Image (cartoon, rainbow, N blue to C red; front, side, top):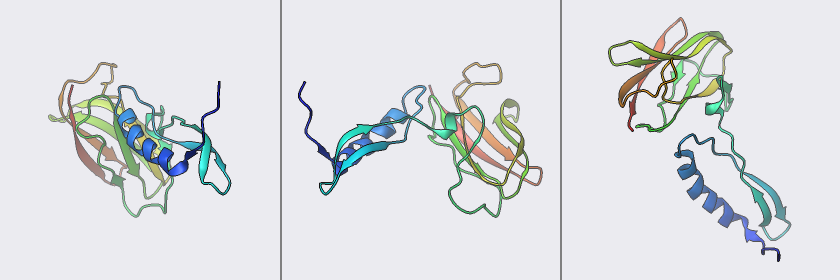
Length: 163
């Protein structure tokens, strides 16, 4: 089988930028990191590319993602995507080590699921919700609240679930 000619790296990155967001929206996606395995010198061309899949938000526990100084206050990033069909990425930041609770509530304030409960260090974190309740059933379409509490305060964001 003949070897394919090298492809300009900017072409590859442009294609990845188009394809990866769509892949990330697919059911049960685990998506979006990329690795260029070899770039040919002086030509700025790649002869082989591997797309790896990793998303810290789909890990079984919150993953510290760093990315800058420790925040000055508790922060809960807007859920993404919103509205959500299969999965929601959540990001939060803690200004100090604390016992943290990240919960999903219905509009009546009833707990649907506790996503995180326990001590965490001061850091930025990524986590995800698979749109299932505490019993493992898919939640009904509608509006839900995501509440982050650290003992000193709390932040709440809305998320719409569609099917």
